[in-house]
Image (cartoon, rainbow, N blue to C red; front, top):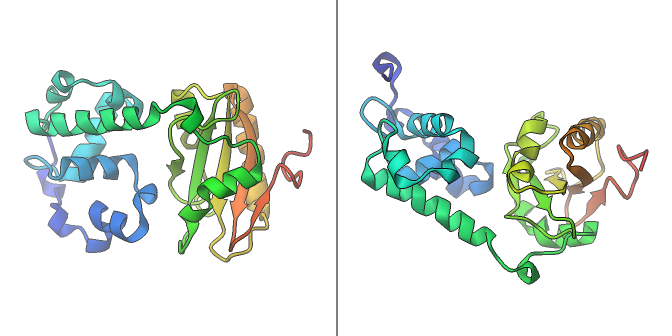
Length: 235
């Protein structure tokens, strides 16, 4: 049962911390999985606000991948999920699947740093904080699914390999590219960028997913760490 002594309604949460307000201000890519599910649900249950309910649903389902595999009947077996909420989540998951099932010709070919920048560069315009995206690719370098946001930048918020490779693993990608921005406008990699990239290369090798590049976006410019042989020294 929920701990009512520590229960906070969304009215108790500061406005700039609520999922809808955060999405409106910063864009959907900075929200956690639980916050996105909370927006889909709209409201919580007795003794549990919508974000806490969303966290529990994800935990009980086995994460986002498990939630995507859940049907309406199984969702309704989760405490706090009635027919309406279960239908909302199932519909959102189906929309995500349909969006990912586009023809190969429609999926962007991301085999060069310039193609990556052309595809994703606009997503960083006006951002005042670091944001990182992971691009999961098939054997021909075409995008699988959509650009997946990792909470925070890869150096300002120490990116865990599990977070970076979660979506590529689910999508059975053979390779991946990490892209993040420098709000300062200077795309030159920092020492932290280089160290994190080395760690991600090693983690990807262990998973059988090659990290093809780490592209850093600045003000109308970008740096390919692969092309500059930074962290990719042995390639």
